[in-house]
Length: 140
View 1 (cartoon, rainbow, N blue to C red):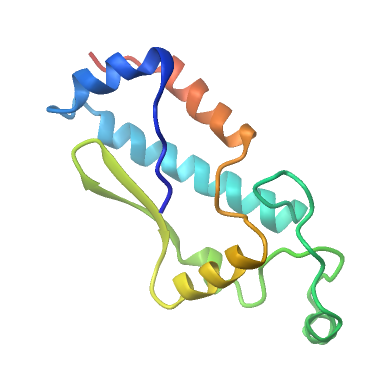
View 2: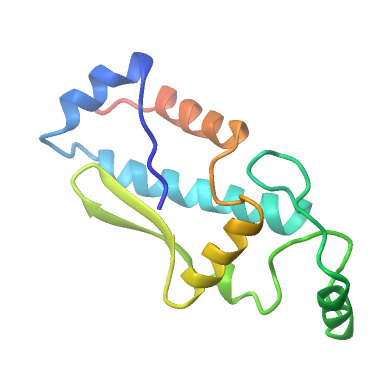
């Protein structure tokens, strides 16, 4: 699960919204969808982790296994069956609260991959998505 701490100019807005929703939870859910899409694109299309650098290459054994299945082997894209990223979801968990996570047993796979190379934390590019979306929106 990702927790985003809001600081600076947005703190008064968040304080004002704590007791009421005013559409903020739906906004957060839409934002979580955009962030999950960005994470997925960054990993699957570019092989970049949270540091915006390439993740470690697959082991020779795993590269050969991927090659036999007709999968790309030039960078780590964390996609063998597609199940892990297909389980990536976002959910309302309360007023002004949304969680981003992997469903079921795919959570274990994501946790294992996160230990090898951080990929689920937000990058500076993804934090900018948050800033841009908050700057566009008025809730009160």
